[in-house]
Length: 396
Image (cartoon, rainbow, N blue to C red; front, side):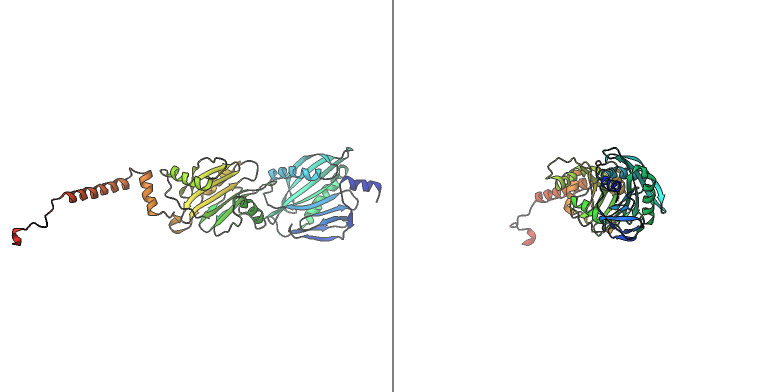
């Protein structure tokens, strides 16, 4: 190996290599395989179920293949977001500084939408470095193919990236989105940009919902939807059943019942949580809370208790989260008996009318009946009574 080749290896932070036979290198967790052509060398420890690293035998190009756990749509926005994410990967290579994104776009490669990002930087001695990353959807994940090297080999770097991406074997292409939600007691439809998680994504989603105490997402009692992001956790909303029955909820009782619900959910909260605003959930009124930035909670009574919907923003802010949650809640259909009508005990109905609607016809009518009963009782009590010891003439 020449001094120049050793210098190139050192500049790219490459580990010692082992001659790899041309052929297929399977990665189970990624869900595919690299078909390595002749003239490439496998990096030491460069082959696993998740990632693959190799270098061209002429030392011009360094290659890496890996995956990220979600399948967002392949768009211009995704291309730019991923490009910014790739900067840290370039900077991790020995001595590369001032890395920037030159451009990011969407192309078609191997008959599939693919984002392409071009990045550049330089070593301390000023030697320019460039690289490109191709990203495409596969089986609920996103596969990334990166090639990089000195800038004077830019054409070779791009040609190798395209060749490696085009010849990769993948178990599945982009999966089709599903927007219908269903659980044991309610259904709904997600808005544009949202979908249900794919099987490969679900373990990662459960780690997110576990932050709010829901680790299982049992489809018999919950449904879940996501808004995938290219370089961040997805926005997530999930609805589950909760055994909590309250009295009638309408414009008359909302504030009073909200106080009870508020105490149940936030009574021990260290920071104050504002009172809920009314929200439409299917055919009924519910409660909508904003406990903190990036977290939302909606509640609606139904036959099994309370439909509890949490929303979590994947980014730093809640932009679009409120609109998505409210749009979804508006499509809810309760599937239980009588449309999932809440089961309300008789005493709660009595208290509802006495406390919130004291001038309503049922209360007024009840008052009239009660007055009638009381008046009748008084009249009965005041009627002349016969002395049991008096003797009528007819008895003689």
